[in-house]
Amino acid sequence: QVQLVESGGGVVQAGGSLRLSCAASALTFSTYTMAWFRQAPGKEREFVCGVYRSGTITYCDDLVKGRFTISKDNAKSTVYLQMISLKPEDTAVYLCAAAQGVIGLRLDSKYDYWGQGTQVTVSS
Image 1 (cartoon, helix red, strand yellow):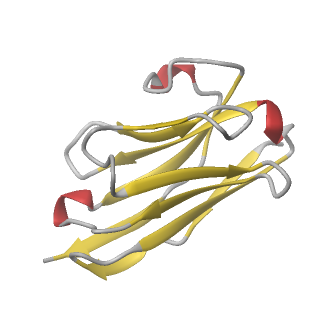
Image 2: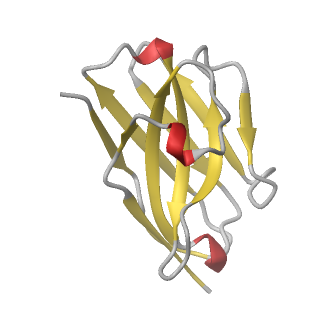
C-alpha cells in the first residue's frame, strides 16, 4: 500500500525557516512527479512547488518563489520543501502528493496519492 508521510511542520516566527519532508513507500519513487500543496482554513488547496521525476526540474508558485525550494532524493524516496523567510500567510496544512509520469504540476486532480499533511503555523 502506497504511503506518503509528511514531517517537519511546526510553529515558527515570521522570518523563520522550516524544512518539510515527505517519505514515500511502496512505489517506484524515481518514476513519480512529486509536489507540495497547502490548504489554509476556509481556503482551497493550492499548489506550492513541484519536481519532476528525475529531480532536476522544479517549479514553485510565484507566491513562494525565492523563499521555498523543493528537492527530490530518489535514493531515499523522499521529497523535501525548504522554506525560508516565512510569513504568517504561509500558515496552512502542507500536503505531499505523487503522480506517475509527466503532468501539469498545478493540477491536483492529476495526482495519484496524497499524504495526510503537516501543520505549519507562522506567528507574527
